[in-house]
Image (cartoon, rainbow, N blue to C red; front, side, top):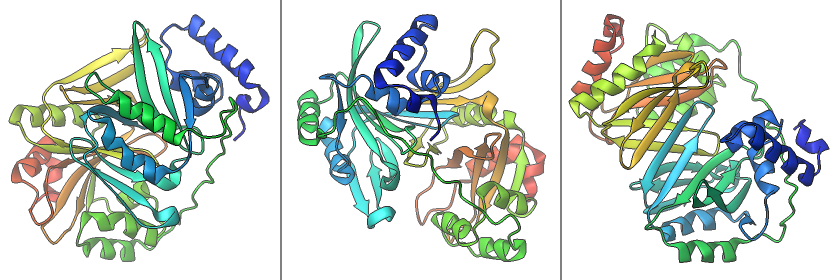
Length: 364
């Protein structure tokens, strides 16, 4: 990974970070890392001491210890969307072997964990304004945050301290190595007829990603190829009215957002929807869900396209709305809530239908 951090010592990087914080009070570590051509993990490593501890890479064991923390706040994000849930890691399971090992968390906090992309983690205590934030933070090979778990007032702090003792890594160097992921080469000219036939024969929504992998097609390209049959592009301004109408109807929905190492899932009603602008010119437009135990923060200005997507299943068609950034990478997905063996609700399909008359040929 070519970046300035490789040419700087940890001490120099730390000084540059602190100078930037003085210049721009309140700047977040993610924004500082971008400004310094570094990564969050590299910046955080420069603070290693008794308050910041690098943890070892026994990821499966660490994941299974998280329920001991009790009620926490779990945060997962990508460049344009943040999901935050307050609750406990109740039921944790790990499946698969080697690079295919996947963790599942079921309960108030629900995630799908791709352990292959867990690279380094830190236990962190930091002062923010007048209070101390205590967390476990996990990063991928490029030093980008995979997930952050913040303790709350009723969390088990003794369990946290024991986890730090049990998982403290031998290496506590303030230098943090990172490396770039190799870009994935997709088929630029897949056989659309064969792809769409396989799409039509889907039995479960979980079969969609394996379908894309089998045909080596980028997700966005697949949506383009299926337009008019299984997909329909819609206005990027549709997400706010979608959430507002779901809140008005008290309609439970599902929201998926994540990154290469963690996918966080919301399954419940949403209540308080707010659009807020940040920056001197209001260039950052944040669409927020601000509920007691769940927050979503979506950079509406970074949503470049939005699609209605239909996936056939044995329980009938499942309809989602998927939003993408300018690089054609998925930001988030929205579904009407459903369980295996139960069809998606008519209310959800009607809600999507009512956003635009053009959805009539997609949702039936």
